Amino acid sequence: MTDAKQVKLKPGDTIGILGGGQLGRMLAMAAARLGLRCQVFSPDPDSPAFDVVLNATCAEYADVEALELFAHDVDVITYEFENVPAAAAMVLDARRPVLPNRKILETTQDRLAEKDFVTKLGIGTAAYADVTSVSSLREAILRIGLPAVLKTRRFGYDGKGQAIIREGDDIAKVWTSLATKSAILEAFIPYEREISVIAARSATGEVECFDVTENEHRDHILKVSRAPAPIPDTLADQARDVASKIATALDYVGVLAVEMFVLANGTGPKVLVNEIAPRVHNSGHWTLDGASVSQFEQHIRAIAGWPLGKPVRHGEIVTMTNLIGDEINDYDKWLTVPGATVHIYGKGAPRPGRKMGHVTEVRPAKDK
Image (cartoon, rainbow, N blue to C red; front, side):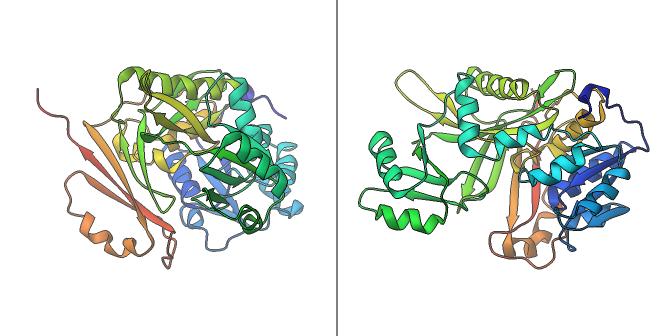
């Protein structure tokens, strides 16, 4: 493995991106503005990121020869999704710097390992328990109580791979429906709101956080993000401190997102960590048009060994709205909205629950 501190790209160098979705597309576009080239590796021939790069590799992640050729053509490698196969990451890491470090994936790909990691840092999470069978699920329910959320330890996003368990539910049926032998049970949190912090960390340990964002989900899919979140400054500081502490403990290089719950209790609101995403994140899309530097540019700067930017929000409030499924067909209604910018991912035919694009809206600051 190459020391991240030794990576120092110059304009004209090439970044390899694992994954060809919209996040890879936007990373490549941010890199291009800085004079850096990108090559995308993805098994999907219809990857939207292929449209914005000169060179692409369409091959399976198990294709060692393709991985080796890909590594030979690039100077540093990053990824746009966290479920990079461990074997592929090892092949690449032996040949080129992989940032963020592939070892971080061992923590963030496993919900139980991630919760243990956060807890050991003294950061709060929902109560949780390891579950491997119906009997261990029943024992976990006795300790944690109901309602609770049962999640697969690996994979799963946008509500996939999880189920809420309530009083009276058939426990055995719920366990069977999840089709896994490795799960985690989490206490159901009666939260006040959901927030996230997008943090960037350089190889030299510098951390820059964007404004805390409030997130609204519909059908378990992020629909709207707003920055800044309407929370007290002290709570926003606490949330940013949590994200910074996590990034530093991971010795992270790049951009990560920390999703949190805001609780309201007798001693005042507090935050609990829900999940860590070791990559650029949907809730940070508002930064494309709503900040002096986007999350995508910050990630490129970090893995290139360049100084991070100081994020300054444009306007009073920035809102990001996901265009999901058939909503993309009405993209033109946004084109004349003052302060709105439309981003279409080029994914082809819309499907229910599929993120097809997003719109950012910047509300100008009020005159003083």
